[in-house]
Image (cartoon, rainbow, N blue to C red; front, top):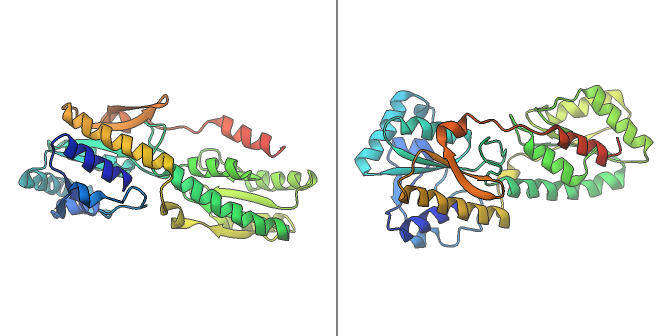
Length: 304
């Protein structure tokens, strides 16, 4: 919402007419488009989610669906499309550009896995939501001297799980990028006990394993009875943090400014502490790697 607001206000400031496409690529195919004025985006900077809604579109994954979407743009006189989302959204924008539609991408995914940008909108809000939940959960785990397994989102990327794990002082973090065997995990818990710990926090990215699988492995190898908490979609909602509000505002403004300059087929991104942009094809060919240092830091902080 903060990014939608920024795009609308920046575009009107520069003399553009702005239309919101509801329900993503599905809405573009079917012409679900509404005119947006400044008042339409008032008081949404503090709201999570999107007033434009979102939806997956199997039809848009086909060339025929993409042609329909491009035809909608031509019929409605839409010169350019600013797409806010993750890899799937950008792949769609990339396909649309092949039919002559000008596109700009703004990275927004709590997985923070878009390779060409250091930061994706939504990550800080999701991380802080998870951290807050785990801090509350820890109070119970500590009081009852228990092991807790918390499953966070991250199907193909563990950036959220690792960040949250470091922030809450987890005993162990399981991520897809650096697989850890259950034997290694149990050994971390044993060492923690020998070091005087009486409760243990394990954070696992959903792409590494399920919380139930991890808990079962711990239960089988120890006398512990782990409690599993799956945070699920609670991580995707809530009031955005200040960082996300400001980043969304700057990225939205830059996206419109690129169109004003006649630059298209770009992805807005953060790099070296500032905001910039890269070619969309180049950006989508870039992959983000998790640094081994983060695992080393985690081991050092737990004394293992």
